[in-house]
Image 1 (cartoon, rainbow, N blue to C red):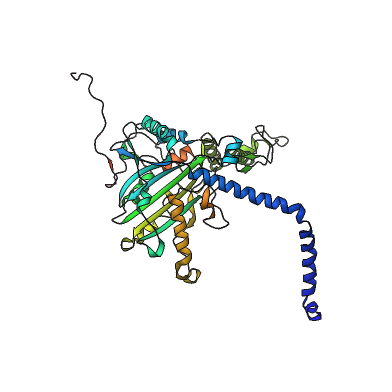
Image 2 (cartoon, rainbow, N blue to C red):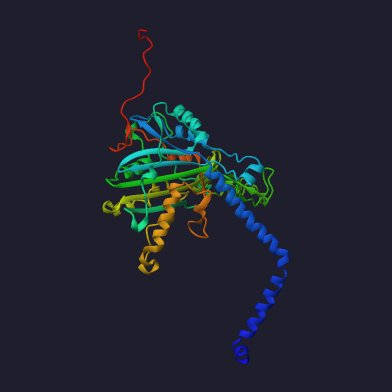
Length: 427
């Protein structure tokens, strides 16, 4: 014992006891709260999984005509219909586990054949069809089987290779990405050959897939929820309450422009705003423009799959820069959040056990379109997958139906144009 005391272990032992004994003596007070919180969390997960398992999902394929002369504004108007905020009454989401409805916007290449899909619950089928036909009367919409069921990824034992990437924003949600308005696609009368559509780079990449290769891009969307804790009081909201991304943007603008601060003696109220640079002014204007749009919680992932004998490393290198055309240094953009490309050193993953497990989880997450609820929150251990906010303008930029500017040969379009019958046909 004297030897332990010389080493200092006895003193450490006594200090540890002095902390742990009162802690466990207080168990009758904090224990029930801890157990109740644990069971509440598990009950919530159970009821949500039960509700989700009862949802009837369908896959809608959108076939495009040879010519589309509408700008992404038409897609933005359609996206407004997906802004569904209802979660039912208190009893619905607490006892029944009801969750907010979400949708999946997907661009897919099946051996070079480019297709557009929207995955939704059956209840929204008529709503989506009506809104799409209202904006794009010449398209065709079909209910089709889920294309993911035809790929059975089993890791090292299977016939398929897979690489996946999850994306995130480079800055806070309220900073907008480079949108179709910045590219001038909102202007009317521009000839097709003079348009610059940033989506064409993605379309060309999808069209480059060859025999035995598939590329899947998935954009999951759900009406944005309140996640920001307010710092200041404004618009009848108090500090400490939960606000949405627009509230966070307002606080940032107030802080950046100093517009709510009292002016210094002898200076005009707008003096501090006049001190802003042209770049600062443009950023504030871009953020304010975004605040006028609906916002969606989003998750974006992309997978490259191929038969093992058809694996093409060059297609992997293109995945990280898939959304680079929408990225700006002064505003926002996309970067890699997680990937299943591999580890830097061989000793980090013996026999590829860790990366195989990660790829299987990523494949299942894509297949079940899980991001906001369910098992995907466990995909990366304690670091849960958090959604980020994109407005309808930003979503319409990264997912819209391109016009003739996209001339990829494998981009399947409707060969003929719809037209009504002449009114003077004999009866």
